[in-house]
Image (cartoon, rainbow, N blue to C red; front, side, top):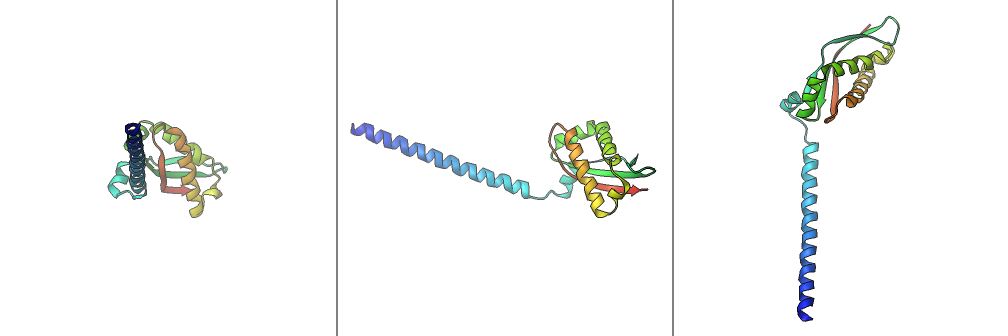
Amino acid sequence: MGKLGKLEKIIAVVIIATIVGGGAAFYVGQKDAEAEVDKPLSAEEVEKLSVATDIITTNLASPGSYGVVQFNILLSDKKTKKEAEKRTAEVRAAVIATVASFEKDELIGENGIETLETAVAARLAEVFQKGTVDRVLVTEFKVQ
């Protein structure tokens, strides 16, 4: 019975050490992942993960008004960028539909541009099956 008691203690110590070691490894892995997420992208990385739309002209919801826009879309990874490059017609259609839903007065000023960027990002999130849209920037903007 003495040997069995020692064996149980050794097994318990090994199990506890494994749990503690696994927990420590998980914690360190999470910290590394958080550090990667918080790290801002370099200009080269932004360029590699971005796509630009053509200049798009579309009617607005306000009668007699139209908008001329162009966007730069920052995507989460290279696979999503490739998907965006293959779905240019869907991206263009989503942008046109989103811009056309706004009244001219809603697009005026900094708040209007931010609202437009947010709306386009949300609409594009529905288009892509892989990855995410990290940011949408208006790079050309005119309303009349």
